[in-house]
Image (cartoon, rainbow, N blue to C red; front, side):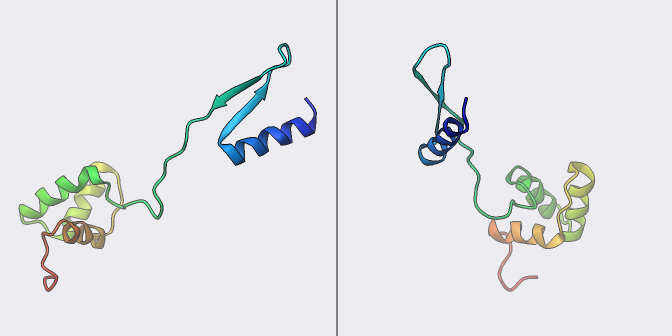
Length: 100
C-alpha cells in the first residue's frame, strides 16, 4: 500500500468518521464503522454520581464535610476534597445558601 493510499484513508476517516479500507485481493472498498467516543466536556467530577447517595446518607447521619471526604477516601479509594462534598450537597439542594 503506498503512502498516498494511507493518506487518503486517514483523510476520509477524519472528514466522514468512516474508515475506508481497500482489500488487496478484491478491488472493492470495505466500509468499517469505528465506535464513536462519547465524552463529556470539562473536568470529570471528583465524586462520581454513583456515590452521591452515599454522601447524602453520611450527611444525614450527622457527618461533616471532612469526615465524609475521609470515609470516601478510605472505602472507595477516591481522593475528593471536602469542598467537593459540599458542592454535591449544594447541588442536590440539601444546603441552604447561607449555611456553611
